[in-house]
Length: 457
Image (cartoon, rainbow, N blue to C red; front, side, top):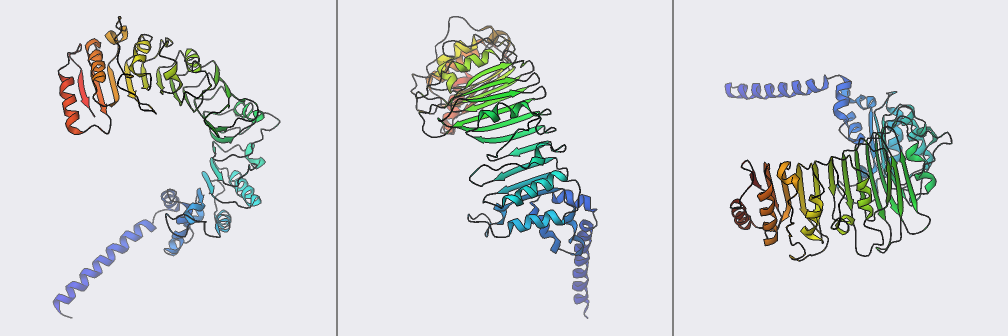
């Protein structure tokens, strides 16, 4: 062998050893570490690692996170179509082959009908293995009953029911005893469920309800009563025509509730009690002229939320109510408000009611085209005290650079004596040259605060 050929052989041999060392380092890790790394992959891919080498043949059997999703069994990645046959057999094989008596997560997504007896068997297997988190999506075109073992499971702490399952609250009144995070999707729910379920979970800390209502039947009533609940999201949508007659009522009693998020295309009637810990409220309401729901319900709800420190409101029902009167929220420090068809005329009414506001975000937003005159700014006779004494940050989103916007900016800069920063966020259609011109105009405006910085985004 020549000298040069020997050097090439040694070089290849060295690279081969380096590759082997790297492979050995991974394979030498304990099963617990390998399973933790593999837990970030779908179970289908984890099981596939068994063909890598003898060392990997049984690693998947120690999995504690089981993620079954028939969408990952498509014939071609990213292509639509029916899942490949054998999904049910695969789930059963993994449940039979895995060794842990305790698992952390059981995720099941079936986008096509499956055998219900198999479904119950899978969920019961997860419950018996003390799963802490269970998420179920089962598309059967009709309600599916949950296994009875799930209702009394002492291990489940996170439960997400992503389709309309048939939920039966046990006669004893206690349901999902240790569930801290509950997500449910309901379609035309009966009051026998909505009046009981959310009062029957003794450990509940986070609740997310997604409900679809129709015009038929009685008014839907949601009763949420919990001494442990901290975060609540209620998403209500109506089915069918926009001229809906659907109606719903909500009663909340939650002394530990800190965050309330309401999203709806109609605004229900709310009655709340003991929300002494509530500090963050988001009202995202869509409202149209066709709606027969009283828009003043939003104001009536805000009157009951006097302790909130942060409030975000959409232009929906509020846009048709708070242009006349806005409740005095004495603890409110941060306000984000979307201004719609009523325009900037709502601001004097809102701002004069908030005495301790420190941060203000204005979003110019509307579902419909509005004229510049509709967004006209009318300066009030009295400057709100909070502008003079408290507000440190103002952010205006959706700026287009029209004259009325600049008048508003000038007013806010003129009277905000302790303002530290004003952020101007332009609408995407505003060009860079236009942004520079608007920025130069704003820089020339007199400012009450010498510390105020201007940011253009």
